[in-house]
Length: 195
Image (cartoon, rainbow, N blue to C red; front, side, top):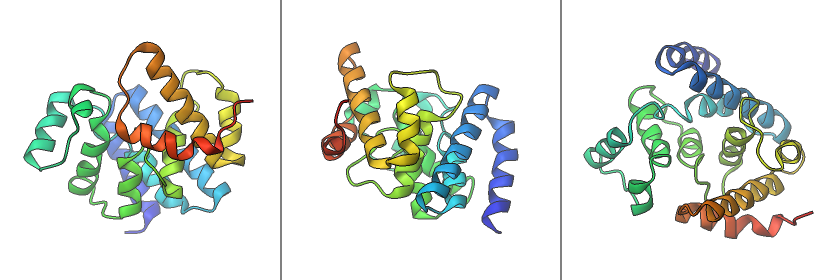
């Protein structure tokens, strides 16, 4: 099956499974990722598919995420066990493989790292991470207009800017930060110069 057919099939299936606001977000991420892929020379169809599936496990409860991880021997950090917003990325990889027959490692890695980021991300991983943050349905966050411009002009600066703002925000509200996010921040902060 061609990737364009896969993305059309995924759209129909996800529309049935996701709540309307989550489906709108999913489409926003998919189309933003595809647009960024055009600009940055990445595979547009892979960006579209990864964007469509990035939150495919988000509709599940944290308890369901933990059970799937335990049953399938998917590693969980203590931070992930405590934070309901993190495990959906790892479980999303499992769902993408077992339910949607996606085996492309670039797509699966983009799904895996779309929430925390990591050091030395691939172009597709950066695109999906950023698209999840900037898609048009997202609420307006600090520096959003500038970050949206950076997404299409300087992807590493954009990534560093998002990571910087995320780490500062988590510290401000007293929420713990995943190690992968801190590692990504330390790796990419050299690209970020506060203007």
